[in-house]
Image (cartoon, rainbow over all chains, first blue to last red; front, side, top):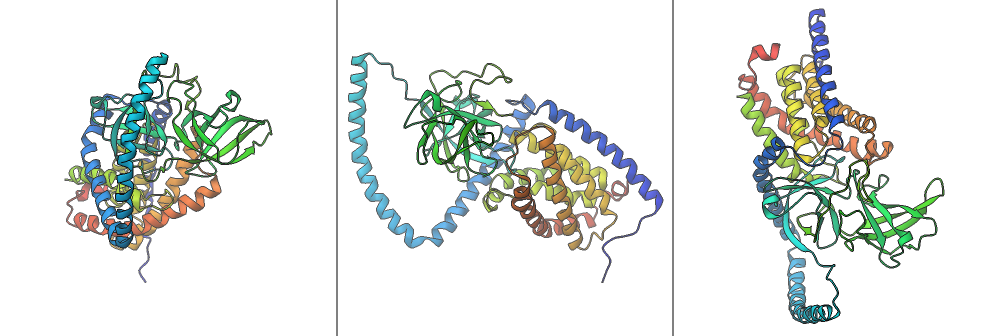
Length: 302
Length: 171
């Protein structure tokens, strides 16, 4: 059998040592740059240009992927799809009727609100976007969407799916935007339990390091009124995420190691592994966190 | 020629990583196409070329996916350089050799990444034991088999010195 390793002489070893030192120096420089930019928010113009150049290719591959995946799924589940199609048609007809009823109710609601002089605060304009790329590494969960500043997307805007909140806009280029997901360890959001809405039950939702893909609601008082099955929504504190956006449901509530506070493990409402179409929430006014060092209630974990 | 092919491979790699490979991965763990390209070209082009290609690949990843600038550039530069350094120690025409080499480099870079995450005091999404079992081991397997697909065509191109001139490799 042929040996895998080739023996080397001393000159070759010296050359390797020199190259090693050069490479280590370059690495130190790169790591210093990384340390300097570790908390960066937004992108510089060269990055924006590069994102703009690569985005069409990413978009094309993403569409191709979806097409292939859908085709394979269709072949595999043809009979199921037929049944599902019939069911969906039936649901659609019911939904159309419901929508008409909803429109009537909304109009009535608006009229009543105007009559009562209440300010409408719970409706946001949505910008529909498609996910065209995902961060391939598992450390920083970001996705790229095909809508950017040209379409009205701005940094810090919340991003949702039809299921719930998924994150916020990290940086924007004219036709794309990077979305930092809630599963990114650098992202957190101030949240409240929808059932109780106690001011004392406001916690910070962030990625669960013990269970990737799940979220954790931290810094809850020990006696907080929170139970498994409870729905958790954004509190609106901090100014980044509008209030009332669905985050997930409580799976379990436990005390922390010191026993001073408790935390809840959350099942995210949105499926972070299957993000295709998302909506950027355009609130009435978007406010940036006052400083990176002291984010209000949500923002960078690091 | 090498710049053109490498640029095409990078764009293809970034696009594939963000789409097809992201779907192919299990439990959120995906193969790193750029790492495979970097190591393959590092083996064929030597440590200097490997380091440069790795740094460019990592920087591209940093820019496009919002990680700290230079973070993955440093990791991939090290991977490319290591591949180049070991290039003289292995028989490049045996696909099993680069496949074995990337298994080691994959494990090394993943552990190095973990170390850097701790060094930069970034929150860790995995406990170390889970990281080894659910991430590092799975990626070693991905990279091992994908190198068997990606390396041979690159080797055939390089055999005609179409990627790196012979002198550049010897340097």
